Image (tube, rainbow, N blue to C red):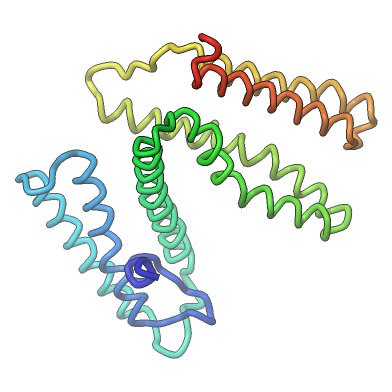
Length: 249
């Protein structure tokens, strides 16, 4: 894949089967430069004095990290101690690459929709939303079907913990970054009916689960599933009708 080498050169990997001291030193050295490139692209600092300064600091940081990696690792096997910096760096750089790829995919999706005459709202409600969730759906289904009772509990926890993380951590971090970027001016969130509709259906799904589960002695059955699917289909039908102009918000 075209992105394999860039990812390998910027994401620290200390697993036994994929360990390479060369790649480890390279990732420690080049990761700050990738962060600086993303920072400058968002701040419009590419080619400016501020952007060059950011690159210089990133290069200096990469030189220090690369030197430390060179002197604290061995060629035959990954480090056995002080793993936290490597794991934290690998996690953060993986998140960064996910963000970069997701941003490009969204741009590509919007472009395809524009060429085909499809509303971005419809694409977001269908292709983007389903594509963003299909990985969790497959993993949770596999866990529930093949992981016995504990697997089912883990799958249910994942179904609710994933959206909670996306809503609280993802949305919270996005708002912090947006507010920080627009400082000292306040960051205003557009007040549109769609926001309240989404929140309403989310609350409706939670209330339905809160109503059914205690009555069923916390056992999941088709009543809960059918109700949740019905709520989602109502939401999808409403949003598609508004996007197609059949119904006005």
